[in-house]
Amino acid sequence: MSTTSQDFRTDQRNAGRLRKAVRQRSWTFIVILVIVLSLFSYLAGMYTISRDLAQTRLLLQALQTETQKARRDLAAQNSSQTNLQAQLQRTKAELEAIRPSKDSFVISPNQSITVGEGLLTIGLIGSPTNGSVSLNVNGVRHALGSGDVLQLNLTKSSCRIAVQSFDMFKATIVASCGTPT
Image (cartoon, rainbow, N blue to C red; front, side, top):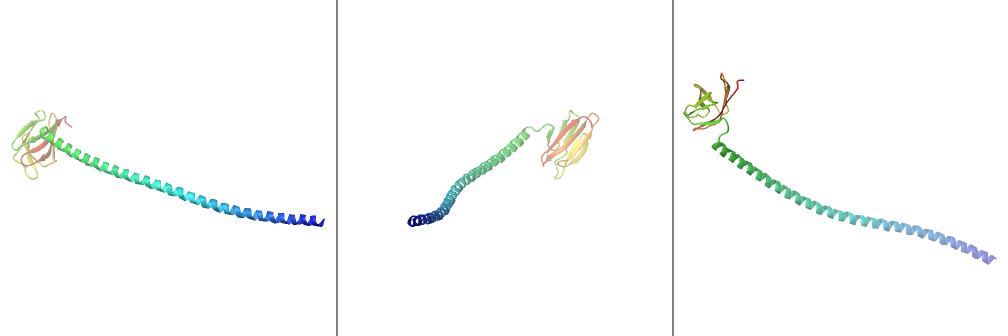
């Protein structure tokens, strides 16, 4: 009996030692497994980040190219618009020279015109000077500069005469008459 009991006790001790060794190896295996999984996760994350970073760089480069193209197009449109505006201004000036706007008159020195349905007779007395023109309005002499306005209240209506511009050979005026104010 003693041999069997001793064998049994030895088996139990060996089994305890075996369990203890398996537990220690299990913990070692688990720790190594966690370290390997952590390392794998880290490397996978780095790969994903580097791939995403490369895609972001490509997208950024494409957007910069688009932005530069849009800026060039905008500059070309601005240039075209400026050219069109200058052409429009030239065309307006040419049209104005051919056909002055309503109530706008060009008077040469020592010339007179009748405006406002015959209510006003306006004449340019001599050549304009550097700072003013001498206008004869219904027999009364007035010295006016560029941008000056002469308001006349007549019995039938109120008339307004404005000097737009003048040079040595002509004066441009705007004359209109309406109901008295």
